[in-house]
Image (cartoon, rainbow, N blue to C red; front, side, top):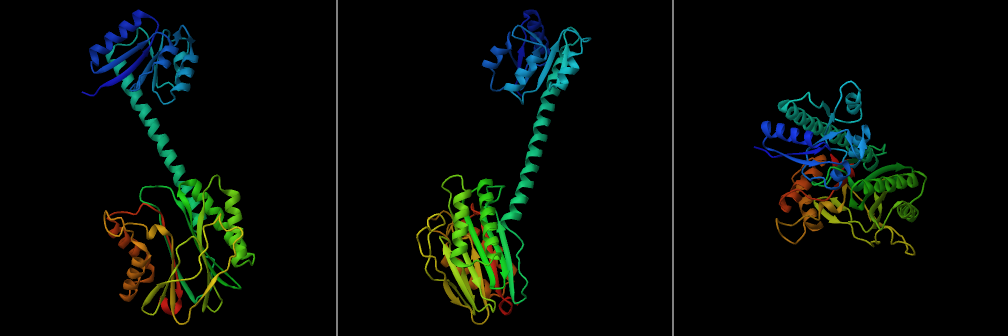
Length: 384
């Protein structure tokens, strides 16, 4: 038999004895805690209480004020109101004010009292479930808005470049984290961005959206290289609420798609796929955003002759364990090895990112805890 806990707030000793005896007869499992004043009840409220029986004629609270005070301090507690008269309209008013039920003294027996308490608890639980459901719906809507901001549709027209995008939030969170990417084509070429705001949650996601939008606006305005990086860093410094930082990798492809200018700010370098080889792009790396002031911001250039592909990714893809329980990380070298093997096996380009994630999780011994974002681009000849 499950233990149930009920609070009775009643200053009339006779009514208290009557309620106690009725419940003892029909619900011996119910633990009844009695108080003579509302303030005493609020000061000594039992942590396991599931419902309150509240008299509306207390020495320190009369009428609906008693219900209002109780609900203000313990808003989720189901309340059954006790009233001495049925013709004064106080019962229906109490229901409108948030009580689950009302009982008229002298007109209720033990089974009716137990049933009222039980239904009040069930209705209270249902109300909480509805509230949680609505909150979950609001979170889902917010996630959708954040996702549209973090992971936009690429703004690209050329048919000479193919691309695939991939995003998977960390396994222990419903909310998006701070990973983001973007692709924009302008008269100067195709510009790629991938980045990561440290931390996880709506604040980081909102900051990631601000950085991505700032990057797109700067690129569309014709800015390149150092101007874009400096502008994004200024937005980060202006919008962050604490010491959060961000990392980004930028790749600007010339109109002929034969050359790439690369800027790395604390972010893993993209992997270049050409022929049967996969290698990490090597060149000068800058520190994280927030630490660039006073530093020379110069991209390094990579020649892209022939057919080629580029894999841009966030560090969530490589920071899992090399084997279950190991201290060593999966790492960029293993990612490159796996990518080379998959390309050699002829796997579909659109399946590369999810397959790489599956392999990283296999090595990790379970789902990765960090968000993973991947941007895969390649010349039309390599993609086919």
